[in-house]
Length: 323
Image (tube, rainbow, N blue to C red; front, top):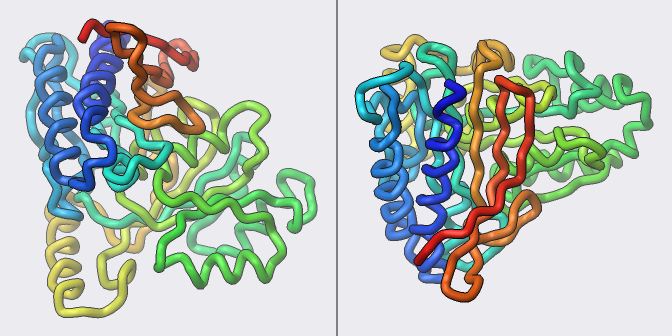
């Protein structure tokens, strides 16, 4: 695994560089397509027998690296890969901050294998490890985390995504008096930010994509935080419609085929049952975790956050690329 570190970093760098010229173009599928093609080409040059275990794209019918797609040169370690070539495609399309290219890999069989569907996620900083239980209410979890951190509930800092499905949750958080940080997109970045040393954030609660859930779990595992996830179908996540009902039936069938359960709580160790993890996130646009792609004279610079669960390191890596 350790020998694949550069290849994983290179893959997110190439995806970010491919998306960069399209910032502000307004076409999400064009951005996804460019990043997916670049990441696929890069991963196919790696000395590994890789398999996409979960990936972004199916849920919104975007270009994607397919679940169970085989990648690499066919030699070297067998690895499972979770990918989101662009986390925050909408943000790239309108030129907003905090878009990343993200992937994580681990030995074969060690990452959660599930469809691209919705996942309810609860993440806490390392000091609150063991204080969460998704079978309980959001309020109960927040009170448990506050007790673990030895702070009043009103001083708790909670991160949530700015989505219509979260409006009732945001009202509840406001009524409880906790401090709320609302992100437009990017729950992988949110998970990492609250696990960073000296972070002012305490909890992230969100309903988002399962690929981002597995990617978050990889980062949280390396950084010592805690997380639980629950797969939910489109009816539960988005409300009733004929389309959502049809999609939910397909999601449940895929879950049954892949041996996972809807509305079942998966712990961090069930989603990622190894410490032998490599995680790479490269900025496309400027953000809280990394800088975006930048022109420096005749070159392009990328900045990446690279987390290595094997040697327990966290690196911020600047790379200059010939154009």
